[in-house]
Image 1 (cartoon, rainbow, N blue to C red):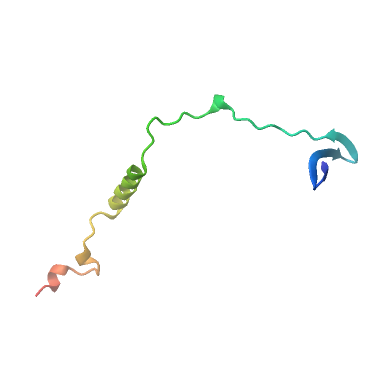
Image 2 (cartoon, rainbow, N blue to C red; image 1 turned 90 degrees about the vertical axis):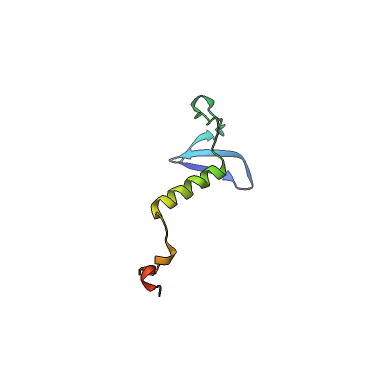
Length: 80
């Protein structure tokens, strides 16, 4: 299938196949199909609520973070 057109004037596009002209191309009009639209949530979560969820998940994976034990040694043993 070949489309013959003038790049400076796209108002006419001819359709060719195996050396035969099949006519002028007709643009397809795209429309929104409202019958298959997904239902919208009644109360979408706010940005703050989303960040709270991310923080809770992040802290849940880390657990309690003890800065005194970051080097791997017990901080209690280093005190004089």
